[in-house]
Image (cartoon, rainbow, N blue to C red; front, side, top):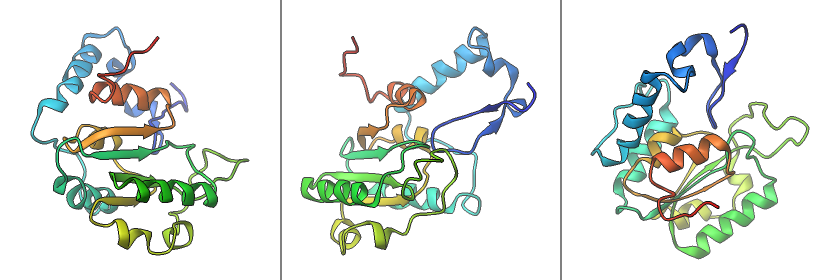
Length: 188
């Protein structure tokens, strides 16, 4: 496999040599079982994540504090993938729309875009300079902004998530389908 990597939206690349070969073969029985298991995630009361707070403190905190206090299917999840960085003006406009909507949300905000290097890792965004003044305090009861990354599959499978706004990348579409986000959508 050489230096090949397996890429998932919003996550660091994984060396293909670290992924079991049976999961790289879509015709394998193990791969098919994994897909069946993943589709059942939306039926469970919880998901055990193989991580720990010291490794991913922001993601764990976001899951603990934000989603678990919201009613079922009441939160819109906004995540725009690895290349989904916007200009400061665009981020500001999204924030204004979210606030005016009054809809519960979980929004992953990345640093502003560098059009010449869209897939380069960016530092955590400075939310105070990107968002409208007072936005976080005005929306704290029904909205949450997380810097850079969350475990998307786990978030999509959480019972409070009722909608998903994404960059429509292939992996995000598949993850949303498996989580049941597209159950009422007809694709033609």
